[in-house]
Length: 188
Image (cartoon, rainbow, N blue to C red; front, top):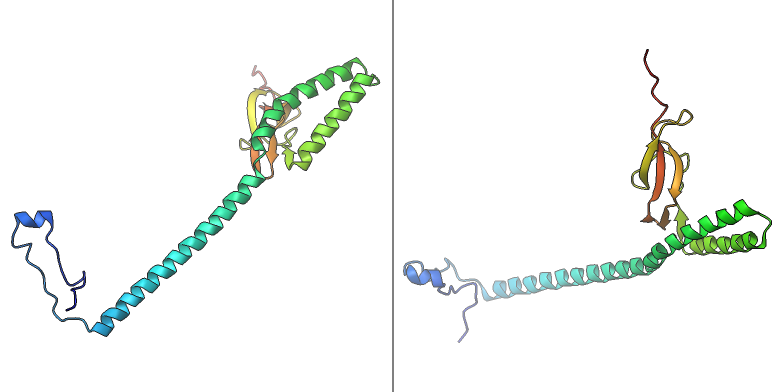
């Protein structure tokens, strides 16, 4: 005795109990040939197998890509924490330079500064060029505007805080002062 396949039988649903006419099984017009039914079943399982394999391959590729990205940007938080320290170090270096460029303190701080910048470069960090460039809100953060007879509107006059990128990802935007163009002339 063979069991009916799920496609050929219809089970009563809870909503069908309230409507006895809907609970009556619907019969197919022609019974399927057993070989055709089995072939269709095999095709269905093959399709499911192919889809599952494709999903697994996509998962593997996505996992490998995420792992590579994680390794590439793993130091981003450490580097972000280092930037304020580097800013303060640069201010100290400028103060030592103002006192005397021949002092041992200035020369020692200069060597340490070069080592820090070399370390950042070797880690894949790039300083964002800003001075004299056109303002780009994707790379720069405008802190104020000033009039300038020399530079066109939207050109960066000064950098108040350096910006950095790690490979192609922004770590910190450069804080800049932007030109608002020449001062308006008073009309007489």
